Image (cartoon, rainbow, N blue to C red; front, side):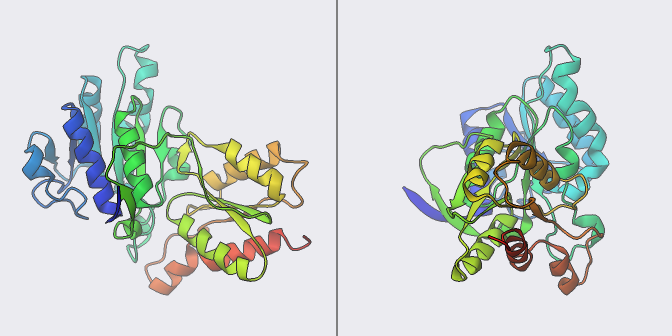
Length: 327
């Protein structure tokens, strides 16, 4: 039976259910215990699981990110919360140079089943240093898996899969989605990594995106539909692994493609998706893949400038019109 709950509650349910299921699972991070989490994702978990499994840490991302790796190497399954993925930059050495390489460098002797999760991207007037979209930079590193849910149902199912995974998983959430609601079953379920979801069907253009921009793409598709342009919207769900086969199948039907990526354009996930579509669908495309990104500038603090810098429905609509101009 499904009920409507907030995105943050779906995350908490996923962690709590997995902690009840497996005593090796624990959560750690800044303010996750006594304060119930900076965004109340871990509300009530300290009362149920106690301070040995819901652990407040010092304000030292590099320290507790590395501590989590040690715990994972010794057989535990840590969930490490970054209050913001912007703060993960000071932990780049452990999360990029240790966790993804541990199994490889130890010849299979030590795995690293760890989940790093927290808010990614602009949260709303947080300024340039607190608005990082890290997916493009971090997805360049072999050995990690990256999930970006766009709704509460996926948030719970993908997080449960992440916690059970034997590899490091970077779980990128959005502060702007935490209070959004959606139907989430009470029954047990997980969502397989590497399986995109088609959110809307259309024959005129394929829009590929993930995370928060999925809603922008849906809004744009709704507007375009009023003008007779029907778009397929594909929610990638995970970046590593990337479900390129679902994208290719759609592009071969629509012959046009727009990729929407909340990170900067240069060397981005969107650029990779576009490159793969060009390589696999060269004879099917009737125009080059059009891309919508955050503008190639640091995130502004001013609200109006921040909204203009980010991907939005208007930019996506314009990109679809440009891609299908001669259709």
